[in-house]
Amino acid sequence: MTLLQLNELTVYYGPVRGIAGVSLEVEEGEVVALLGANGAGKSTVLKALSGLVRPLSGTISYDGRDLRSIRAHDRVRLGLVQVPEGRRIFPALTVEENLELAGFGFGDPRAKRRSRVEEVLERFPLLQPHVGKLAGMLSGGEQQILAIGRAMMAGPRLLMVDEPSLGLAPQMVEYVYELLEGIARQGTAVLLVEQNVTLAFEISRRAYVLQQGRVVLSGASADLEDDPRVVAAYLGTDRGDGDRLASETADP
Amino acid sequence: MSLELVVSDIVAGLFLGASFALIAVGYSMVYGILRLINFAHGDFYMVAAFISYTILGAVTVGTKVDWGNVVWVGVVTMLAGGVLAVAVAKLVYSPMRRAATLSLMIAALGVSQILENGVLNIPSWGSNYLPFPVTPPSAGFTVATVHYTWTQVGIIGIAVVLMGGAYWIVNHTMVGTAMRAVAQDRTAAMLMGIKTDRIISIVFFIGGGLAGAAAIMMSLYYGEINYLMGFSIGLQAFTAAVLGGIGNVAGAALGGLLLGVLESVGTGIFGAQWALLFAFGALVLTLWLRPRGLLGERVGQRV
Image 1 (tube, rainbow over the protein chains, first blue to last red):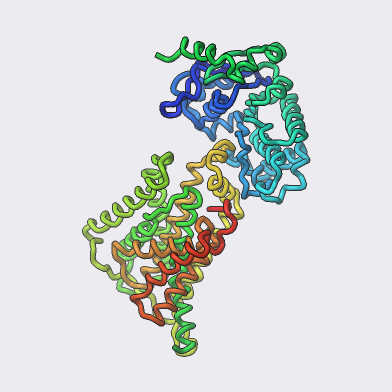
Image 2: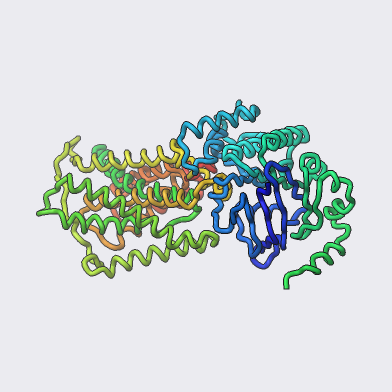
């Protein structure tokens, strides 16, 4: 069943184009990678999904619902949860406060929130020794795990993860990806933005490649893995082609 | 100068400082969450004073204090201060959420002018000093030839309780945790499902409420009100907030009390015309020697 469907989504930041006519789908429980070089528009897609930027045109349908009129904090409640780029944990709150806060807006009783904190801590044992520490004191990897744990507190049906491997030691990257795989195995759909193509193909079933705000390639990860055009999209070696692609369908 | 006089100046300073502190806490909380120096904050205090003046005037017979009346009017005044602050936040600051900090600050100055001139133009309020409808009794106790009234003691006590309450909310409740989260990273808070607008409104409500409490206390004590009464006290409260470490509730309270004592002792020695010099001298010295303020070391703990 289709959980998320973007149709011809276009986002501008003032006069600057973020994405143009992006269409993509995520099935229930599916892991989908969103690839592309810096500035290709990957994070913009996630921001539009989370309601942080308002699309100029196009539609977002999530669980059969039109998201346009739903505000950012309410989207979280619907299970559309983002782990933002750069982790964005609250550095001057404790690890425990970071966790408990996520989903505080749902109006659940405290006991229920507490038991969810316990569940997340059980699932992310690396956080356990740090519960009382300020989150800002954690290592980068631990902060990334906290950011994922915090998102899990909100009970996602679709977890959007923006560059989870950025700036982490290789071992930590592996650990984080194992966590994400575990989350996906339990039925949570994952929309992964990642610059590390190898990692992304490893974990995802399907992938979309963005270039200059447009989807230039999409398909099963297994097929794309060996497709030279993926590398080209990253390195911009066929920039001429990309430009042509862009101008062919440019907005009037 | 005798020791008793110094002690009495210090006590008077704590009393003055309690009002600075109440206003400074609101200043500081709003700054913490929006990075906005809300120059209209002192005018919330002023408008609240006029509201308490009008209600209390309507229900008071003679000038004898009816404490029951004072208490409920005090609560109403706090609510009015809170509602006014939220209204300003919703009507003026919220639509400007993407504007530069400087634009917000100028908007705050505009709100301040609107409130002051609004009150000035209300016929029964106007520009004169209005005598507050009740005068607290002078009963109290005397220590070493200096007389202290129970009203003074009560006011300091209530101020401490209210500030303690604000501190407790910010640091020991989930709403307070949400305030601190919004202060640190509003977008991330939104992504965690926090209704950030509501949290900001709560901060304004508490800040306005504390200003309302200060308004009725100070009006009761000084016995008169005026449409410009919020201007100077607002600047002093701002100074107190910076002195204590702006964005920090405990710092604002401490800064307020310190500033009150400093002004009171200073004017005791040099004369009342020097009061503001002490306040702004303290501001300059703080910005020079310890810009983050006395308790400002926990950067990021703002609100």
